[in-house]
Length: 228
Length: 228
Image 1 (tube, each protein chain N blue to C red):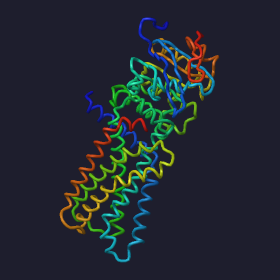
Image 2 (image 1 turned 135 degrees about the horizontal axis):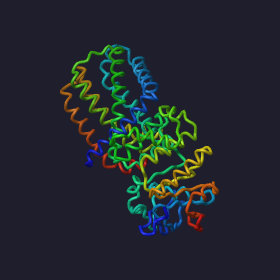
Image 3 (image 1 turned 180 degrees about the vertical axis):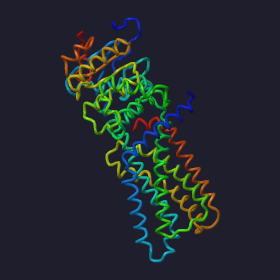
Image 4 (image 1 turned 135 degrees about the vertical axis):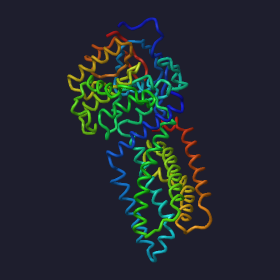
């Protein structure tokens, strides 16, 4: 197999394994989705002095919620490799480290997209949102989620072996995701008819951030795997 | 098969030092193991048996001295040997939410870079049968299996990779009498087929009956060697 094929095959294997485990354990369904629902309702209680406030802030609220949910999902993804030395087996496997990184990132991407779909439905219903630029919304969601997943696939393994990782992960991950939060929120505001100008430059910025995280993750995947 | 005297040693350590933090887990190990040999590593708790096995697996860095395993220089690149060795450690290296077949299949596919070779499922089930894992439990999540059953799955996951060097840390632990007999048979078969076996055990009567020779570690160094 060529090097690229080996990377892609390893990514598919690892992503399939992680998604199968999530489908069995239902951590995302039983823990993350209820968390997201509670956050959406809390925002509604806190800001619903007038209906327009929620609609105006909806883009930012959506991505703040996604980022918090991402911390939970990333933590869970990293914990999988802590089960009974499973990460050690991954190191011994001989799989291409870049493939392991991409696979972990791909699994996070799928899990976060599921969370976002549920979150979007909840916000449309509870906040009475009217979706405008659907194409811009979808492209923004895909690119921003890929960026979050890539960053999560870097930082998850990095903190997995640390004591106090539950608090260390948000401290490391949230600042890195701040530019993603900013760009995705602005693009969503435009798509929802609340922002000014075009949303596509923000999507371009998200694409650049995603590219940086993916390249960084692939380059550091060897040492990252040793931290798993 | 008698140990080969013609080929270079599979394991060749000279003054090998490995640190756990600042503590020298191995403090100058000299050891040669030839192809087809079964070598028992014995010694008191904390003697460095586990560290020796992990160093040979490329999981614990050798910081000074020379260390060659299967032709790989472990000082320069410890990761290079990993795909060629099998490690049965204290931890089972299994994913709790996957069943036995899925765990073994994952490790088998990982050993070939993520590809899915023809006849893989049959090979996986044959490996589970070979270690005496009950067919009725093939599709049960391993978290519901007993310690001994998990140990058998772990062993199947190791042998399905067809390692050239078997590294086993207290392999009899958790197995019933039939399982121990079966394991001993597997070690002899593996050596007869040309693989090399290095294992640590406190069950000396049983282990000495299987091993060609033993080395005793004390304080992270080889204290003496003896034929068994």
